[in-house]
Amino acid sequence: MVKRRVKGRYTTLFVCLFFLSNISAQGIDYALDSVVVERDGFKKFHGYFVDERTPVPKTLITNNTITASIGFANMYDTYLSPLEYKGFSVHLMYEQLRRTTWFDYRFYKQQVVEVEFAKGDSPAKNVTEYWGILNYRLGGHYSVYNTDKLRLGIGGLWRLNAGVLYNERNGNNPASARGYTNLDLSVTASYKFRWFAVRWQMDSPLIGMLFSPKYGQSYYEISLGNSVGVVNFASLHNQRALRNYFTVDIPIKNYTVRVGYLGSWYQTKVHNIQTHHYTNNFVIGFPIEGVKKARPRATNSYW
Figure 1 (cartoon, rainbow, N blue to C red):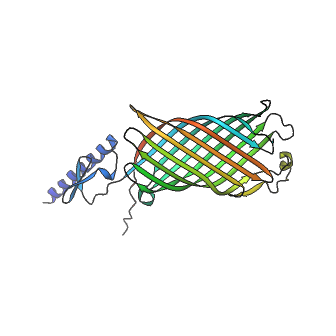
Figure 2: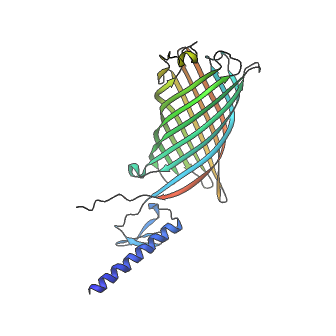
Figure 3: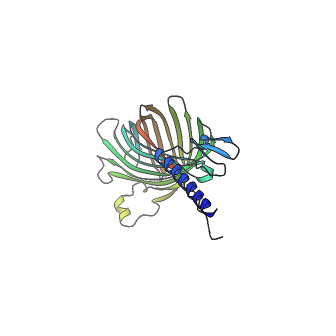
């Protein structure tokens, strides 16, 4: 009688190992929507019957996208010049969107690394400005409404920017450094049609800190220690910005192509220095999706 029980336990263990290996090998989508109760005490999970008490993990999809965009730029900084400089802008961006287990699988983590280069000419076309900036954002969105086709989310992002604006004519102060960090409010929406999917996201900073010299203060003075007031509290009273991102994902055979629009508007007014940087870009990229199984919660076996 004992031998039969031991043999039965080994048989059950072998069946479970075979079941798990097939799931891992086939790269199954672990969505709860695929669970169908067939009869009392059992449910069907991707063709297998398991006990209804068996926990079935949800899908953790990671979307990695590399995009390039090109468009128009409008640059203005009274520290360097009282004129607006207009030209072109080029963006390179890496974006990662990942579903997490937080808040019962309703939180989507976002991470973005973005590099921008812009070049603009004065109204007389006789002076050129060059712009370069590195941007990093980390945060996410809580899904307030989620169906098979529509998802609405609200959340926040921590943003860190560092860059420089260079004017080829100026002698004493040819460049203006840009450095700021903010907590952004962000909203997002996505809708899945039959042949394609659309996604929209809008971000705007609420509070943060920014670097700005005083009018007429040279960076040489700052390097000597005269740095009082160069770091400032930033909010809607002296900093306003909006980032509008709209994309369309189109599957073509085994690949997906992303096209869209990226609009970025940023302006400040600190120490009687006004700046703005506006861009309107056409976006093209290639998103790649991966599926990760949720890690089971650890159990304490001591009691």
